[in-house]
Image (cartoon, rainbow, N blue to C red):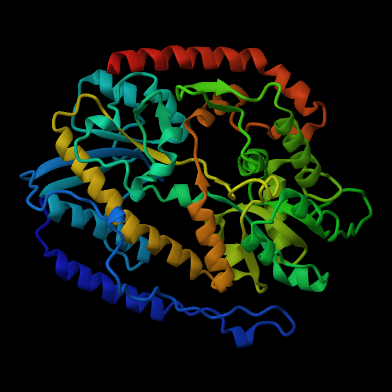
Amino acid sequence: MKRTRPICLLLALLMLASAVLVSCSGGTDPDEETTGRPSVTDVPASAAPETEPPDPDTVHDLPADLDFDGADFTMATWSGWALLTRDWNGETVNDTKYELELYVEELLNVNVTEYWIGRDMDNIKPLDYYLSGETEVQIFNLLDRDAFNNMLEGIFLPYSSLRYVDLDKKYWYSDIADRLSAGEFQFMTLGSVQLNSFRHAACLFMNLAVAEDYQINVPFDDVDNGTWTFDKLAAYKGVVHHDVDNDGKISKEDSNTFGSTEAAQNALDTLTAADIHFIGKDENKLPVLQAYGNEKLIDALEYCQNLFFDPTDSPWKDEEMSKGSSYYMFVHDRELFMTAKIGDMANGELREMESVYVVLPFPKWDEAQENYISRTFDTLFSMVFNTVEDTDMVGAVLEAMSAYGYQHLIPALIETSLQKKYNNDPRNVKNIQLCFDTRYVEMSDFMIWDIFGDTPTWRLMTDGKFTPSSWLEKYRNKAEGILDDALEDITYLIKDMT
């Protein structure tokens, strides 16, 4: 049923709810922090009101009189990864999602529905749904590697078929459009509604209490000056080390330099930050293997292994132990750095810790590298079935959603992240925004999950039986076979589109 509540009233209620939420958010007063620990500088909980018109490149250009007469816009997303929400609950991001849905419905006169696979629908796959002949669901929101594999099945439309989608706009992240293309065609986009692409952006957490205790410099100036490199990070190795039981390996009762919230991602985060890739694109925007004969890639893998997986300096034995031990050690001021994701700030242990920590981007490979690069993974992409009858309606809804998300939802998420306890230092504000602005996603990278398994490079990093070169050679035939199959499918898709 179409919602008829006036959008202006809903916006007013949302503003009131947000004001109450911010006023009640509390947090420890900086004056109450532990004596001798670095203090946190207060910043306003909410961004200042806009005093200038928004950048035209962040606002959609949909016709003002566009009206789809109550048409249904229906998408499906795996439970736990939903893009939208179903009601107000007083939480800023949730309510902004709901406001987005109501805004689009009011703007275009449509009914927006998101089915949650596994809750509202059976655990059905896109191809099975497509072959069933059903057409109610027009869009599947798919995790990156699933999006790539399902793209190869030829059941989705390229975004150039959607009249109202303007991929040159900032909210579609036009600077990375080529990375998400198969030849000249784009079947997936990185819009501004899929919040996990931000939450899963790689970063580093640095414990300021440990830094102060060991008189260690916090590299804010290096980050600002563009001189924060892997050599600078490696210089910290071993500066925090205390093996309590003298058993030659780190456990959660010891102290160490490097830990991780998800160690299995460290190698891929490192490679991406250094602008190195197993699979890239050729001049025709088609996937090509770049891992073999790539000495820089070997160097980066060896660097990662020596820095993050040294058993004398990291609780590295297995992924679960590493994650649990690392959180414990970091929260109890026994660990200097954790490789992490921005979304890890929402972890309850980190919110409750007494000490202050700061956010840093993953370093550059060297100072010659132009920009910092923050790998993001488990990103959702909206894939449009080629059976869609009204592509104008689907394109208009996607355009309005992403434009509104860029203007309102992304800022709400960043603002909420910055309101987490001990994460409102102005330098954190800058670095969290830096990690967001430098997110990297590459369609060709999605194939590495099929080549190397669910946790690519994890076994190489931890079992000590392989060198990076021998490990890569082990997978060479498989990698080449998967790439050849993908190229055949992509070539067929391109031929069919043209």
